[in-house]
Amino acid sequence: MAPRVAIQMDPIESINIDADSTFVLGLEAQARGCPLWHYHARDLMFRDRKVLARARPLGLRREKGNHFTLGEAAILDLSQVEVVLMRQDPPFDMAYITATHILEHVHPRTLVVNDPVSVRNAPEKLFVTHFENVMPPTLIASATADIRAFRAEHKDIIVKPLFGNGGAGVFHIKPGDENLGALLEMFTQISREPVIVQRYIPEVRQGDKRIILVDGRAAGAVNRVPAAGEARSNMHVGGKPAKTTLTRRESEICEIIGPTLRDKGLIFVGIDVIGDYLTEINVTSPTGIQEINRFDGTRIEAEIWDAIEKRL
Image 1 (cartoon, rainbow, N blue to C red):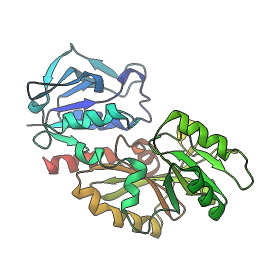
Image 2 (spheres, rainbow, N blue to C red; image 1 turned 180 degrees about the vertical axis):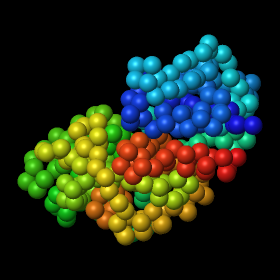
Image 3 (cartoon, rainbow, N blue to C red; image 1 turned 120 degrees about the horizontal axis):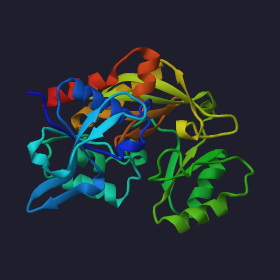
Image 4 (cartoon, helix red, strand yellow; image 1 turned 135 degrees about the vertical axis):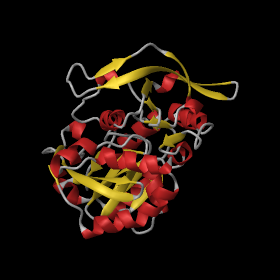
């Protein structure tokens, strides 16, 4: 009997069916005969030691403007489904963390992908720090004096929020740039978290590579080339996808982190590599499946479901 699948995600009405990874994961599950339900993170609840969601039966099809059908909403006991896909987009804030705490009550009897405890303990820019010899020179700090000292050593730096996503709030501070002080004041006013500062990697002009790992194994990659005059390569800020293959160094990075990802139940992970350096490990709602599929003729969503079914 095919597993029943509940998908916790953002509004399905607004997704781009040519780019959204959750959409193809849902299509693959449906093709395997899995009944699907859709609910928003705000519809998740904990009551009388049960994890419930106000969910709607879901049907999917690859038709622009007509890509989904939703049934009537009803309370779904998540202990009565076999798989929950936790796929809402960041920000990785307290609402996101609370959802992991609630879903922890049903996992692993109901398999939550990715493991909610590991998701909670692996914020994307901090998780990288647990692996040796993979990061560029990096500082995580709040004090202006410490950040200025790091800049004095490395000259050309990137400053970004510790829990940002999608390239938001990423600044390239070149040697001689006088805006660092004002920038740090702005970050301080917005948030109490430290910032992350890294030595600028000039190879970013050739692209920021997104590599997908399935149960700890590299399944494919796409290069994201920044637009002219832009330090960020995220596709929604103008970065262009390009076909690529893994270098020896990138394969080495995957081999370093892969066993840990697998052991922590992080089945579907997207990592970002610039030059010879790993900059982020994305475990919340990674993207990139469809772009890689088009370039390489693969079906990474099928590999992910094979891994899920193996865990079941």
